[in-house]
Length: 461
Image 1 (cartoon, rainbow, N blue to C red):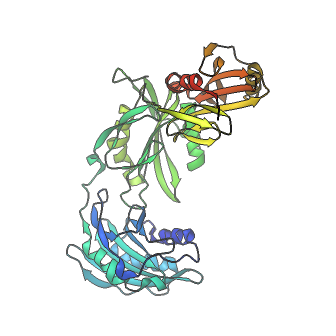
Image 2: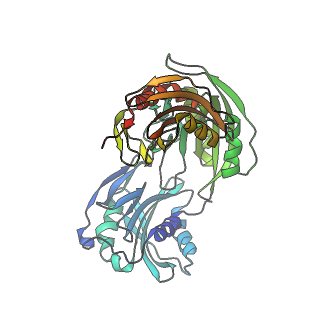
Image 3: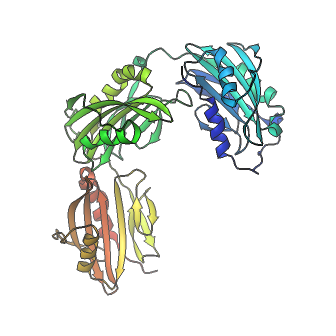
C-alpha cells in the first residue's frame, strides 16, 4: 500500500512560506467560490476565486495564507486516510469522523490540529469519500489566525459542490491529437487534454501527485546510445539498461526529413521519492538523438505503453522547415551596433541571444583594435581548434564586408554547427556567430545568420 501524499503538500507549502507576510484578504466572509474542473481526474466543483492554483488541484491564498487541496489518495481506503495522516503528524489519537452527505457523494469529515514545525500550528479540515480503489480527499489548511469562518465559507461549500465522474477505465481510451514543435523540428501525435509544460513534455496531471508524462524532443548533438545509460545513472539504479528491440519508421510525408531507427528501453526510475517506470525510444539523426519517453506508475505502464508510447514513437517525425524565426530591429548601446535580432529570443547579455528552448544561439561581438583574421583565430583557439577553419567566401553587408566561415565542433560527444562572420574597420573587428544543431543549421543560416550579417552596422547614436 502506498503512503499517503497529503503530508508532502503541507511541508512543501511551509517551506515556501515567508514569516512576517500577512494574508492579503479582508476576512473569510469575502471569499467567493467559482467553478473549476479537472477533466482528467473526472472532478468538477467550486474553488476560491483569487486563490492561485499552483498545481493541479492545489489552490493557495497568498504566501502564508490558507490552501485548499483536491486530491486522490491512491490505493488508500477512505477509512485509512485520517489514521495515516494522524500517524504522519505524530498524533496520539485519530480524530473522530463525522458523516456528511453532499448532493452526489457521502463523505466523512475530520478536523485536526497539528504542529508540523515548532511554533507553527495548523488547522486542517479533511473530507474523504471512496473513489474506486482510491479515496477522494478535500483538505483545507490554515494558520489559526486565518481559519475563522473558512469551514463554513470555503470547506463545506467545496465539499457539497464536488461532482466525481470516474474517467473511462483504462488508458486505451486516450485520445491522440497531432502536434508540431518548431523548437525541436518535430511533428507527431500526443494525448489530447494533457498540459504542455515545455521542452517537449506534456503531463496528464489527473491528481496533484500524478507522475504520468510523455516527452518528445531532440538532444542536440547527442548520440542515441548514450541517452539510456545517462538517464539510468541520474534517475534509476545506475546500471545501463539492455535494449529491448528496434523499430524503423520511414518518412510518412514529403516534408519528413529522415528515416529514424529507434532503440527501446524500459527501466525503473525515482520520481519525487517514488518508484516509477520509464520507457525510452531513442534514434540518431543529423540534429542529435531524437527521444520519446513515457513516465508512469509501474501499475499503469504496460497499458500506457501500448495505448500511448508506441503510437507516439511510430508517428514522430523530424520535419524540415518548422524552425521559423522572425526578425526585429535591434540596437545595442553597449556594443555600438545596430541591425536585426530574432524576435522572442532572450538577450542573456549584450549581443548574446538564446531561444526559449535549447538548440541555438546568436552572438554579436566587437573587439576594439583587432583585425578580422585575428578575431577568427582567437575565437577558434578558444573553441579548441588547432587551426582556423578555411574561409567559405566574402559577403557584402550594409555596414561591413565580411569573411564567412562554417564548420562543426564536437565536444564531449555533442556536435554543434557554427556559422561565423568577421569584419573589420578603423575601430576594430566585429564578429557574428550562430551556434545550432546540424539538423537545423541550413534553415537557421538562411532565416537568421545571413540576414543578421547583412543588416549589422556600427550605431551612429
